[in-house]
Length: 467
Ligand SMILES: *Cc1c(COP(=O)(O)O)cnc(C)c1O
Image (cartoon, rainbow, N blue to C red):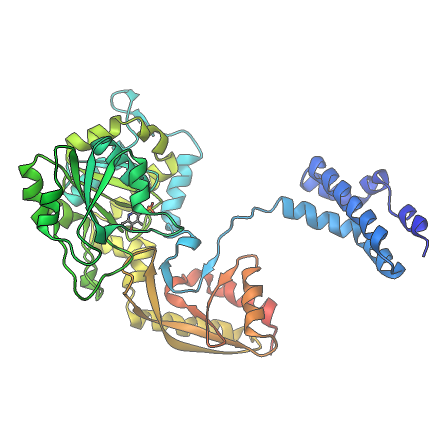
């Protein structure tokens, strides 16, 4: 084969640029990215011809040049981060962005964030205001705390609290409460970053009142409780409740800090789930400072919410670290909207997606599953489709043992294998992440909002084909 002839048959750059298709690309995207794609694709093509011994294949690659350029340019202009459909049944899926925010709330946030706002401007006084002011009163009203603020996430809350209250001193914590929160991040390591020294007391399964009492020295600055929200120690166990620690702390003039992790604001026992200690309970029992995540059971944006006695919250607001950990306008606006729903428990359950999913009765989930089965069958997919019982879980390191009875739509494709289908589902324009069990694709409808049903049918049809 004559490689020189092949090289010479590659269209020149100016010829490509004059091409109608390429002109269209430049109009739609940008001259810069099209030029970049032309240069890299031409270099790839030359390298291909250099190492190719099949003339027909080389010619085919030359014919593909334009469409390759088009593909590269449009990929460059397609955002990589996108919405996915969560069919796993894990409600707070950390890898899938934890708590979804309702479209109504986001619409309001968009109005605020697309223009200027009173984020740090007190409209009444006409001067500088505080970014926490928008939700501080609200959260105090809901929880009974004196003061509140928020930082980037709950790991940051822990660090800021300890840095403000215990830097250079000691913090007493039970060995049974030294949690790893995922991604190899460990609460004890986060705490050390604050400049406080952890004094670990008790053993993994048992910690007694005396253990705390004996650990208090003149360097002690706080007693810390960590709610082990992502695991349970069962069997021969003992721990000290916060209400027992309060008198001990008072006697030594120390604050009691509680990291609640999930931070639930309603009693889940009312909805058939295990009782998870609420933020209100922690405050009522006398905790001086309490922190929790914004995007776990609260169902809001990623944030670390810190509440408690005003004198401690003021210390944190003044800490220089706060400037590095502060929340942005998106979070401040979203937090206010989500917290406002909690003024009525009924509204919270209805309008906060995470709570709606957790508390949705099985009868309703069953109806939804039947509806999705109908939609998929009507699309005439080449697959066996049926509703089957399954179990959802909370996830996000909350209520680890809890399983919520649910319904899934099981899909048995007829023309392709299950692993192949699962892989293809991840590459859809709106990717669908299923659970695969026993060579079946399961879509747990508890985590799939009804508005996605038609889209799921259309997209699956493109992968599975018709009967
Ligand atoms: C999840 C969790 C954290 C970390 O919260 P993020 O908001 O993910 O940073 C800290 N402490 C406990 C007990 C947790 O469960």
